[in-house]
Amino acid sequence: MALKIRLARAGSKKRPYYHVVVADVRSPRDGRFIEQIGSWNPMLPKDGERVKLDEERIKHWLANGALPTDRVARFLDEAGLAKRDARNNPSKAQPGKKAQERVAAAKQAEEAAAAKAAEEAAAAAEAAAAPAEEAAS
Image (cartoon, rainbow, N blue to C red; front, side, top):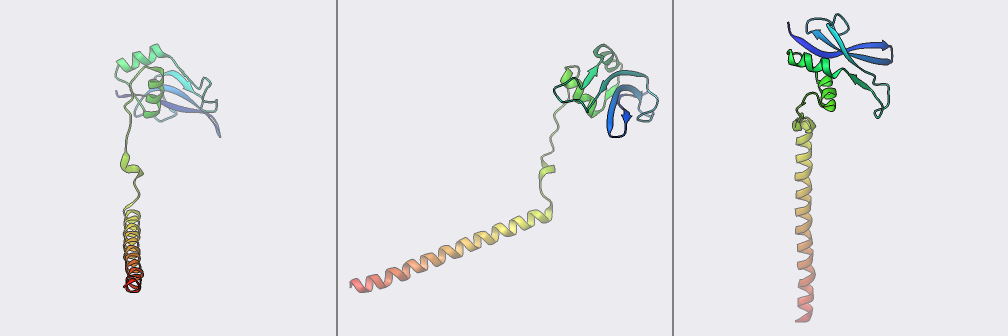
């Protein structure tokens, strides 16, 4: 039997409250569970006691092969009961293909405009220097 340490929602509409439970993976989220081992009240301020865990029972269930869900793993990591690997997905923040093409096209147009302005400035400088040389001769 595969076990999960997960959250079961309680509380009323717009007032969530969660029980941390050990349950079979096949049972429904708010359905049958084996044991309640904690609670989480997200309505409390972050500096308050939002999470309450029974550390002894959690250690027991982790030793028996229960796997925590991601949210519960965060709680266990904060409590020092289990180590949660840091997640990293740098490609998630990248813009899409079309947006990258638009940025590249804008950059290329900007470089072309800067090169054209530099050529015009050089030509203007040469034109300004030529009459000054003729007048000096």
